[in-house]
Each structure stands twice: as structure tokens, then as C-alpha cells.
Image (cartoon, rainbow, N blue to C red; front, side):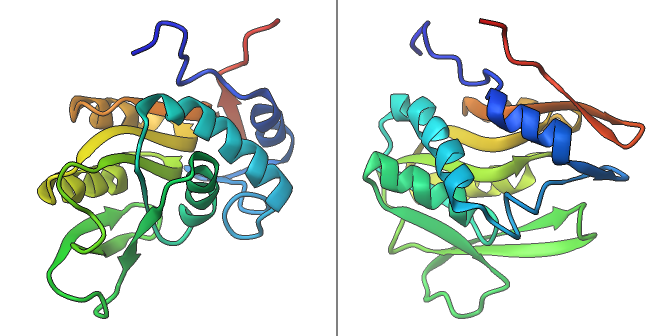
Amino acid sequence: MSPHLDLTAPYAPLVRRIESEGSVDGQILRIDHFLNHRIEPGFIFELAHELARRLSFFQPNIILTAEASGIAPALIVAQTLNVPMVYAKKYSTQVEAPALSREIHSPTKGDNTRLVISRRYIKPGQRIVIVDDFLANGRTAAALIDMAREAGADVLGAGFVVEKRFKHGREYIESLHVPVSSLAQVEHLKNGRAILTQPRKE
């Protein structure tokens, strides 16, 4: 990896916005008013372009994500890098066979979700980068990595808009030999506030 590539440098515009606008509900950081429910296109474009800049090092030819909240940043990363995007469908019985599938537990929702991808869209030898909105415990990203590898593809990296460092998902994904990039790192949640890694001063 390039010695000049910092995959986890805090992206100041996002850090400042989370600090000023984010709310905390237990272990859940809510920034869905601009990231993954109500989406601000201009800001999402800015975030995804920065993520694409970092992930371009891996020279992917497919961006892989999971529906639904990963689609917006992943689509813009794919557009920026001029490669297709594939998303794993949730709860779907409509994905044609043969298909890749994994069941994951969602601690946020408290239940299990099945992710499904048609084998038509992930091929042996493809260069895959995972993109999603949040990295917490890493189960979703790990399921995507596992499915891509089952299909014979190479998973070269994973990029996230926000990383919850206290959930240790980074360690899990890196143990699978996949480098992780993130734009904002939440160290912990305390007294109703998100404590983030701070950008380096210029």
C-alpha cells in the first residue's frame, strides 16, 4: 500500500457535522437526517468523492454494498470510479438462482437479515471494494466479503462513511485481510454525545 495513502484520516466536514448535529440514542448515533434516510445529495456527493479518492488506490472494477442505506454512497463511489455497483438484496426471494446468500444478525434491529446476490453479477477474478454507510461490528461487510470470495472474486478494500471504533468492526474486517477506510471515526458515545477522532491541524 502507498505510504502516502491515509485511509482513515478524519474528514473534517463530516466530523464537524456529526459533532454539531448528531444525536445519540443508547448505542445508536443518529445522523439519518443527512446520510441514510433523508439524504442531502450535495453532501453525500462530497463524502463519496472523498471515499472514492481513497479507494481508487485499489483499482476496483466492482463496488459492492448492501441495501438500503449503503446504496447512496456506493453508487456515487462507483460513478466516480466509473465502475458498476452491485448491491446485496435483503429479505428477497426474487433473486434468481444460482445465488450467494448469508444471514446476519442486526444488533440495531434485534433480528436476522438474509443478504442475497445473484452469481451473474459477481465473477471470478473481479476486483471488489465494499462500500457502506456505517461500520459497527462488521457483520454485514464480512458477509459481503465472504460471498464475493465464494464467487471467486478478490476483495481488495472496504470503505465506510462512519466507523464506530468502539464496536471493533475494523479489527474484524482487517482480520479477513481487507484494509478499511473511513471518513469519520466515533471513539465512543458519552453523555448523549459522539466523541470523534479529530482531524489533524494543518
